[in-house]
Structure formats: C-alpha cells, structure tokens
Length: 237
Image (tube, rainbow, N blue to C red; front, top):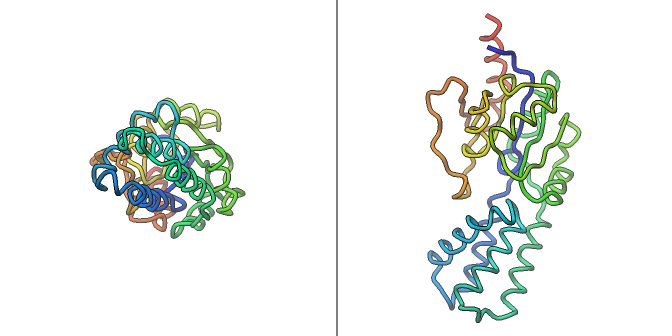
C-alpha cells in the first residue's frame, strides 16, 4: 500500500459552517413568498431550480440567489413584486458577508497534520466567497495549497494531487459530503474520510461506501490525527 503523503480538506461544513446560512436564507425566501405557495412546495421548486442550474451557475451563493429569483418568478407566474426580488438580492448579499465560524477541532486537526503531510484545501463554490471565508478563517497559512474548483470528480482529484506532487493512491480527502469529498477520491484510488455535518444539502446526499478498505468515518475532526497515525503504523508493520 502506498505511503500517505497528501491530505485534502473540504472547506464548507467540514472546516467551517456553511449550510446553516443557506437554511436561514431559505426560510427567509419562503416567508417572502408565503402568499403564493406553501413552504414545502417552495422548497421543492427551489431545489429543482438549483439542480437544473448547477451546470450554468455552479455551486455557491450566487447560483442559489439566482435560483431563488427564478423560483419566485415561476411560482407567482411572473407577478412577484419588485420589492421581493430586491429582498432576495439582499439576502444573497447578506450570505456573502456572513462571518466565518470554524467547526470544532478544525484548526487543531489541520495544524497537527501539516507538520508531516502536504495539506491542501480543496473546495468548490464562488471564487471570491471561498477566498473570503478562507481569509477570515485564519487557516490559510496552514495549507500548502488551495484549490477552488467548479466540481469534484475522480479525474479532478487525480489532477489536483498530481499538481501537488502526489498520486491519488498516496492521498486522502476529508469532508462532510460523501458525494463530493469521499466517493470520487476513493474512485480515483485514494482514501476518503467522512466527517458528517448535522446539515447536508439535498443534492450532496449519497450512500456511504461501507466496507471499502479506503473508506473511514469520524464523528468530528478531533479524531483525524489519530486515524492517520494508526493508518501509518499499520502501513509500516
């Protein structure tokens, strides 16, 4: 088994809070349109808009805001008041200004592993927003590289690790999304470590690859250094 040399970390809802802001904004959205549709119907219509718009707008706040506006126009049959559109634009701007809140053990886990491994931040979403959150997090100096991508797939991970002097077989990815952070890295030949978050976007749900030798799950980032150390001990014996 190849020696582990590189560890990738997801950002949103792995190192810092993110989905909670989307949920609060979605509540704001349903409140603004309460006279036109019930919350469950609005949720389904918004999710459908997000799904079909991913290929156009990508992941992140800007695409979410545009999907809210599109849904508002659709459910009101183009009768949505301009004031509501203005409120949705303001809601998106508020999300882009929301303070970055680190999750438990995030700094300690990255710092502990950065001494022995090449650690890379690998995230998707709006470029400016992700750069802002990284700067606010105070974690930027701990990473040997930062990759902000439009999507996370097995070939994308293989290319990232190659750029940083590693093969996928020598790399690990740590994140809260099975669909984006874990499964594609395992498909590329690496290790995938799932650290669940209490809130997960519906479009990120996937079944865990239970039983795969390169799949691990942890309740939080606090156990990551010990997991990596144990893997290395096993490798060296």
